[in-house]
Length: 511
Image (cartoon, rainbow, N blue to C red; front, side):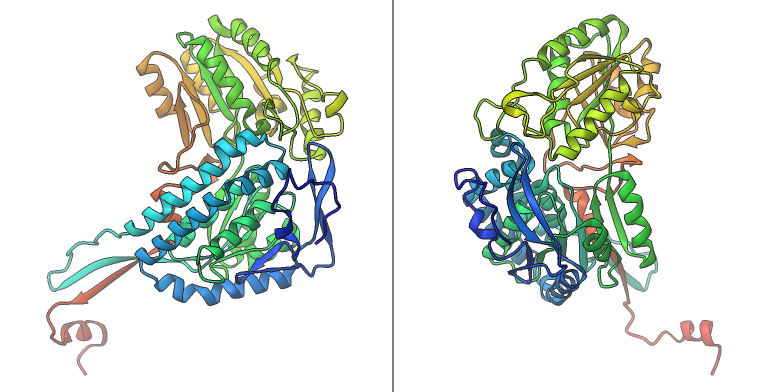
């Protein structure tokens, strides 16, 4: 790995920690051997930050072997021992919070103030939560269904977990994948997106520095087609956890099926934002802009489809456009920046393509272009509001993953809820009303894994996150996530201390 020389120490003070490679296996930094390199690019400037050797099948095999070797001792540790290790882990990450924040903003383009206020504190909170939750793993008794026997249930770790994380929240996704798995006694091999490996590597190093045994947390940084597919299909990987697009999720499921491993998928989203005619309009407008533009819209729970009841529709469009126009684009490291670039120029061009095609059937109220001037070299795109698109149009149905909000009117409550459900996705949604009966109905009838009421986007460690329909299955965060990373064993033993010859006769007859 080498540094092209464009990232200044002020922007990236932890740069020297990546000098020896972008793989972390059995507690040690290593280089890839695939023969191919990748350069992490600062999307705000288009300049290279670090170039590293990609992982190939050999690094995946080594990481899985390290995780497999570490599993018996880690699985055999007491809940208290695993909890203590995670508490130390949280303390190390907290000590290095600024390094994590700067690395996350540099590789993703998100404003540093967002990384400092949301990504890093949220990750520390996740570690602290699972440090406590590790001591509360328990099973439910199967009951005394046979008078001479006693039953109980063991909750056991699965083994080596192969996880694949996306590029939009690299640090938090690493935490969501790793923490419940290791708290439950599993070991992990994580493949981060090759665009954004920096904070995942810092995270694994922090785990080792906190005293977690070598091999419990491993990182392989390679392409999805090579390292990712090899990890998912590896016969010694007992479970795959994947977060990413629905299209890639289908491919992951296909590979995982061949080895009959457990599968956890958190896939795409197209979150509806339903505004009834008695809603607080100012609150809804502010919620829509914040919910649509969080992380430059690169969030699977972001508000993407606003359905507004007809009496409020025109005012909502006007006020939302006006508020979007006040959002300040700029250098992610500048204190006044509200919105950074998209993760790459390719992603910026993809978003622009959606908007350009939508002009044929809808009106672009504001935005719809890349800024010029000082920001022209970065992957920036202006906050964009599109109105009056048909429900079956691409811009309404497909996941754009950019700073774009589409607004459509509806007349009746029945229609609003039906439109909210009218996509293949079901990850998140919100409903806005002062009427508790309306919001109660929305929570029951909107088919999504999370429905916020008079808010959009808050996520906390104590509550589960996961989708319905094409948004996948399984839960991240909360104690519900332990259902993903553990398996249940029924244990039954005979209380009589007498040889049960009647069982033998039933099976074998008299002998």
